[in-house]
Image 1 (tube, rainbow, N blue to C red):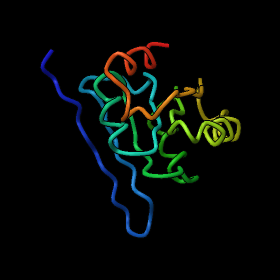
Image 2: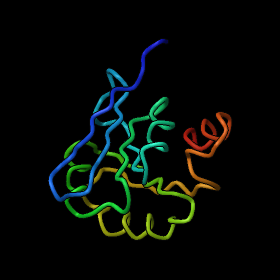
Image 3: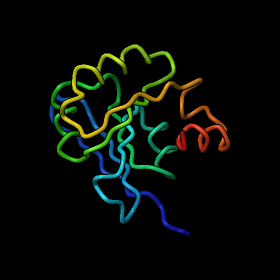
Length: 121
C-alpha cells in the first residue's frame, strides 16, 4: 500500500546494537521476529515487525524485546537454529508466545516466495 517500514537503531556505548524495523501502525502485541542481522530484518520488515540483534542477543537485548513485544519468533540464521531453541527455552516466560522458525536458509537469501511462505507458517 505504499508504506515503508520505519527503522530505529540503538547505538549504545560499548553495547551490542539492536536495529528495529516496525511497519507503520503495527500493534506492539503482534509477533516480533528476532533475527541476527540487518539485511534479514529489512527483508522481514516488509511483512512483520523485526529486530536485528546484530549477532547473538544478550540478556539486556532480550529484556528490551520483552518490553516491546508480547509474542516473538526466534528466526536466527539457518546455522543457528540450536541457539534459537536454547534462547526460546531460557526466555520463554518473558513472552506470551515464543516460537522458533526453522529456516532452510537465511531470510536475507530467500526469494520473495520463500520469504512469504516462511513468514506465513
